[in-house]
Amino acid sequence: MLCIAFLIFSFSIYLRPLNVRDFQGVDKVKAAEGRLVWQKYNCQSCHQLYGLGGYLGPDLTNEYSKFAGSSDVLKAFFKGGFKQMPTYNLSNKEADLLIEFLKVTDASGNGDPQNYKLLKDGMIEQNGKK
Amino acid sequence: MEKNKPNPGKPYFRISLYLLFFGLLAGVLSAIIYILPEFLKEDLGLIKLRPLHVSSVMFWIIIGATGCVYSGLSVLSKVPPIKALANIQLVLWLIALVGIFYSYFIGDFGGREYWEFNPIWALPILLSWMLFLVNFIRMARTIKRWPVYVWMWMSGIVFFLFVFVENYLWIFPYFREHFITDMTIQWKVNGSLVGAINQMLYGTAFFLMDKITKNENNKIGYSKLAFGMYFLGLANLMFNWGHHIYTLPTDNYIRYIAYLVSMTEWIFFVKIIYNWRKNVKEALTNYHFFPYRFLMAADFWVFMNLGQAILMSIPVLNIYTHGTHVTVAHAMGTTIGINSMILFAAVFMFLTPKKVINKPPSSLLNGVFWMTQIALFFLFISLNISGIIKGLWQRDPNHGSFAEMMESLRPIFFVLMLSGSLLTIGFSIFIGTLINYLKIKKY
Image (cartoon, rainbow over all chains, first blue to last red; front, top):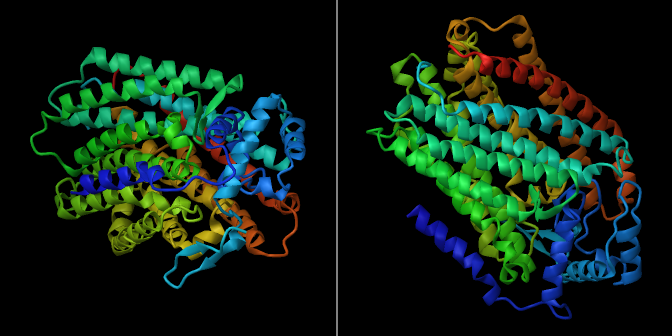
């Protein structure tokens, strides 16, 4: 019984993409490629998305809107390094894909812990996107 | 314990002990980066050191648990594993480890958190695990009535296989193109994999307790309570991973299921407190038996970590600890305090020569044991304090910059580095002792 419940639960998650809308203004194919760039350069080692990841650098969930979608500023960060962040040799194509990925993370919600309201049953909920 | 039979777990113990040593060194170097951010920046940096540290200690636990299951089964089963399969299983692990660590050193990543290596190296691990399952079935089917720990070992092996495959669903664009679903599955996997390995390790702890306990009334192999706990652990493995992603805007039912199931952990907690007196009495009786000492330590760290885990599973509290070092404290507390202590108990039990196992430990081992516990306590506390400071910073609408907050944590990171170094020295002495035991041909 427990195993069947687990399988149903797992498949309900696997099938989730069929029931949700895509984020507007984002190329999901490019963003999925951008996720691979994120993994290739192991950004998760220091940075977080929704508080999940490394602890040395800041959370990047909404970094895209923080820099008002300025590709040049973001690219300068990616390539130039900063303090403990080493310099990376990202190609222009990789940098564009990474920006598309950060556009998706930004469009998905607001990862700032201040943006959550506390519910009476002990659960938390996002206070709208921004 | 029967020591005349050959122990198929020994090569796994050897590899896992070397991995632990390497992982500890990488951990200390990583901690230094938190104090001196530019330390080894261009040569290694946290980019390489974090996966080196995490993968090494993760494999110490996974490969060590494999050794424990093989060792335990060799005592219980009437047949040995198929030698050819066991050898291929081991070779596949070695291929994976060489590939993974070589790629980390040259900076060839491509995987995800905790599994940062190129997915190609997951293949030998997967094949190796399948062979492990075949050998497990061969050995376990000769045991007439399975005690709870054999069920736990089987559940751990089977679920690891399932979840490990799930761990690579992101390779398919269908999953990767949907960020929220992708993140949900990623953390489903991370939570359940820990649960699967815990089944193998807690099963080992039950096995050891059954072998150590002389009082027949305290034997737990077939007790209803032990089976009840096993099913509760299994339910947590399947449904309790959602507390990692309370902040992620995924479907509410996923978050509420995790919230509800995680509250069943109170049952474990109450049970631990209820058993406290009995455990203290048993601890006093077995105190001089060195492997038991580690089980006693694991018991203490279960108490510390479970209390913290339950609190962190309440979303309104989780919002303060999520994304902070409180999470790291929990991860370190469980992997070092619980998993590693159980593993040391098992490895000392299986490898200590017969003529010394019943003697009290040397004053060096005795002192080192207490040094590691104290060092771990300071490590745990320092991580919690830095986590709480960051948590309060996160929730403060007028907070300063991230860099300023990290700067203010530097003295606490110094305590972290110091306690981590002491822990490394202590564990290295245990590792050296056990490697020496491995050299002894006759027990």
